[in-house]
Length: 317
Image (cartoon, rainbow, N blue to C red; front, side):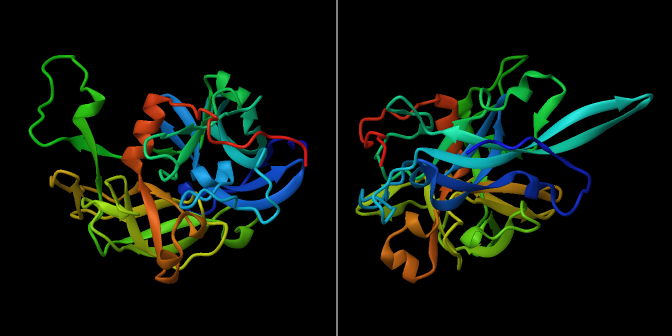
């Protein structure tokens, strides 16, 4: 497999979030194993490709089995990013967009390259890959990536902004989420289907469980996941879940703080785990797990690389 050269974009269709998602083709020794979804998110100065842990590991997080019927573990993924470059012609400044295909080796030696949450491993089904070294164009200060802004936050209950120029500690912030019943959209590539070859399909869903309440996962309570009611297909694992908020919409934090939105905005609430990231009972009920954006941000902030302890060694088939 070889990466193609960036493809210039000379049209501006649709929603800007459609430029942030990517179909992920998963390979082992150039053999296509399956496809999934990912999205580029910016957290601070870090651009990260976010998807599900099971997409990169090839392992079912519910029972530890291999997802591929061939028994193969993924070694590479192929996806794309949208490069934005500021250009100036005479007195006019503007933006050029390029679709850049990239290939990512998932292992350095026997060590996985992705970030993950090792607590309650392997149930925490979310992961991210730092794109800083993978997209060399980012060394140019005029270049950025089209990305989803990390989750909008508010102060935790009882916390007050520090005086003066003192920065607020990250642990003083918390994310807020739509209430149960709220409509959301899952942006992805069901069965590998794309719009115009690149853009995702927007699948409608709704919040099916109270996001501030814990979810029981095989007897363990998790505050990092909630359910949506969604009919999706293979290939949607790793999709961003987006709420199109309107002025006056109420959101809620984990400690019960209500937040009212003042304007129309697109809020990311988490990453969708797809049919491979749920139990058979959940799948039969059309329930999908959404791993919260707050948990994903914490993972990226801590920068915890996968340890490789629980992964099969990558060897030729």
